[in-house]
Amino acid sequence: MVKNLVDKIILDARGKAQDSLKKAEARLEETFLQKKGIIAKEYEEKLDAARKKIDSDMERKLSNFRMEREKEILELQNRLIEEVRKKIEEKFNLNLRDNMNEIIKGLAGEIKGKEYSIKVPETAEVEIENVRVEKDAGLKDAFLLEGAKWKLLFNWERFSSAVSGYIREKAGEYLFGDNGQKGKDRRG
Image 1 (cartoon, rainbow, N blue to C red):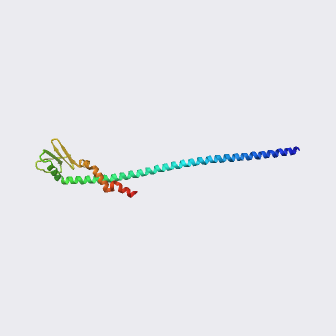
Image 2: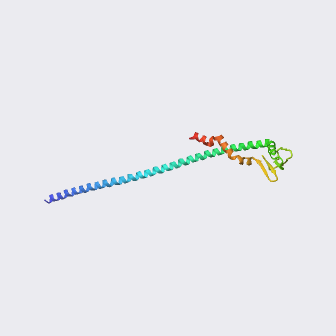
Image 3: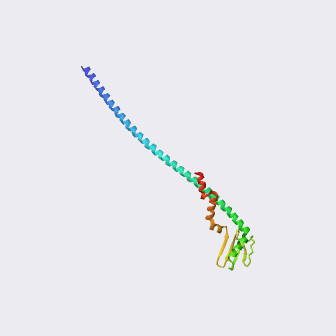
């Protein structure tokens, strides 16, 4: 009888142990699934945040690259426009040297009857009736009309300051068409 009692207690203990083990396994599986869900959710959130950061960083890099490209294109356009401006200046000065006498005579005809003098570079050959012409070592590619209360310096700087916007605009249209828009259309 004792043996039956011991066997019954052992059998009950085994049953309870198996029930406890099944409950523990069920709790363990439930906890595992909860933790797995939390880990999966955190992973997805971190992955999404990483994707957004990568997209943001990539967009910023692409934007910086585009701005750098535009900056280089503008610098190139400005260099080319400056080269054109220098060529125009060279031609202006050459034309002024070659035609100074005629240019001054034309201006002198406009200011007849007023007392004035003209200063020209030492190398210039200018003679105008009834007008005092002085050679000035300080002048190069320029001349100065001077009255009692006025002065008019005629050189590239004065001329270009009056028309610099026009020169840049026309050089840009000539080089790039439609103020650079034509070139942009070809690039996309």
